[in-house]
Amino acid sequence: MADLLSAVIQRPNFLTFVIIFLWGFYIMVTRYNLVKKLVGLYLVQTSVIYFLVSISAKRNSTAPVLLSTTEPVQAMNYANPLPHVLTLTAIVVGVATLGVGLALCAAIYRRYGSLDEEEILKKLE
Amino acid sequence: MSHHFPAILFLLPMFAAISMPVVCLKHRQWSRPISIAVLVAMVGVSILNLISVIHHGEVRYAFSGWAAPLGIEWVADGLASVILVVLSLLGLLALVFAGPASPKDLGGRIVHYYILILLLIASLVGIVFAGDLFNLFVFLEVAAISSYALIGVAGGRALFAAFRYLILGTLGASLYLLGVSYFYAASGTLNMADMAEKLPQLLTSKAVVGGLLFMFIGLGIKMALVPFHAWLPDAYTYAPESISPILASLVTKVALIGWVRIIYWVLGAKAIVYDIPVLLLVGVLGTLAAVIGAVLALSQRDIKMMFSYGGISHIGIILIGVSQGNHTGFVGGVFYLLNDAVMQAALFFLAGVAICQYGVRTVEDMGQIGKRAPWFMVALVVVALGMIGLPPTGGFFGKWYIILGALEANNYIAVAAVLLSTLLTLAYFLKIFESIFRHPATDSEILPGETPLPFKLSVGITAAAVMILGLCSDLIVQFLLNQALPPGM
Image 1 (cartoon, rainbow over the protein chains, first blue to last red):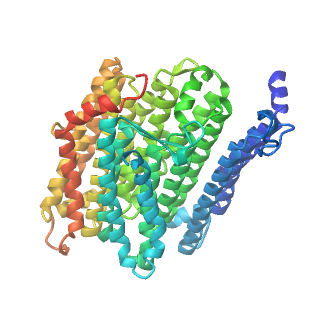
Image 2: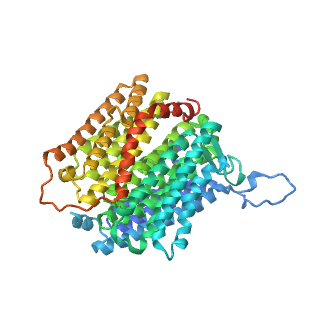
Image 3: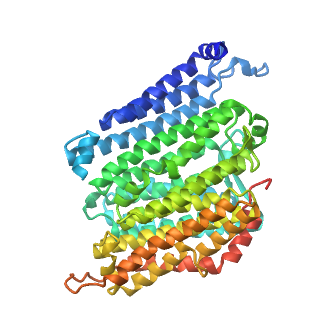
């Protein structure tokens, strides 16, 4: 147990990721307001993006631009650029999803006059 | 030239989708002929691609010349090529069908409508060809976003169904991305072939096990595997009649292909995680899906709802075949997947005709169509034979090979599940036929106008394809055995 605890405390980035992920998931499950559900969903997506960025972080390293062209490349000196690129794509995907989600919310509001899931379900009956 | 076919297949619909707002700015009515022309070209290129793969072996396409582990790679092997032919044919038929069946109040948005359909088809091509895990994620999301929008087009209940699909689908995609980042953290690569070499030593790593779990749940949501299927029936039932055929026949099946790729091409068929063989897990999930989906289908009154649950149960049958771990089962599963794509398209075409042409939505009212449209009844009987799995149709041979594979693996529970699901399928089609023959049309109904030719074309061709796939089953199964088996099996 103590081992597990110390392992968690030594990795604050994973702990933060888990907290944001579960927080977003909690909002998605418990709130009836559709926009709040979308906020929870966006938190979940953001937590995954945060995780991707945090695994590429490295102490005493810099952006992956070659410091010198004559010396051999030292991988230790550079942060891994690939997760950042993945993150950019994932952010774009997330924003697009959020946009479609908000558009659907707006259309639902115009049609049913409410954003509350229970009220809409009542009107659907 | 021939090694560029995968890129051409993707760029055709993608380029058409992007350029359509400009081309059709003044002439909205052009959007439909342009889309159909693009799909006809895709059918041609996909057949050429299949022929070139048969003669010259698989093509590994490296984008902008960056070789595999560093660059983005697309893999056009036997499996992908044969699925691409079915995909572009069904896409073409769905577009033909979409003309008279699309929602009446689209107005000026008809251009957007065809843009979204083309984007959906382009992203499905991307999923089938994707050679690395992150690419798969991006195309899954493009497909998902365009389907949310397309489902929501109908308005009313469809809006809410689309919103639910969006919440669940995006959650699934996030979980899949999380799984991919776990895999990346453990192995340092995203390319499937590269990862397949590095994973066997890492199978005890907690990161890989956790990542595998997240990936499976994520893709499970995307392909509506039984515990995660809640979004599918509503979304497909309330979607516009012109959209549900393409969604039902292609989107879930293509996500399933992604799963098969990860299990066989990345993990390897014999992967064992914490004493549990991965294939056993897949088999159990498939068995549950095959039976539960069919039971739920039996209790539905709405025809589109019933066919949606039928599709869920057939996902289970495909998984049973794929998970047997021998050649017969795998080939049976893939062959059944091709058949199921055709049959689902045919069923939703029929449902679309029933709704648009005759205003019939429930099983009880199906009797009203009976005498008025003999061609409709013939097509329905043929497709029903395929869904149940009776001999001359492709559905029979798919199930036959799946059962042979399960017997070869001494997996009698899987055999029982396939048979039980077959019986339940028979039962829910009997419900439809009973209402047709028990309650013949009453004369007081208003007679509908002439059926548009696109309806007859798409229903007729898919129903014929159900038969043709059965007649050519030997040829296709031999091809799959020779060209589409995963490495190391």
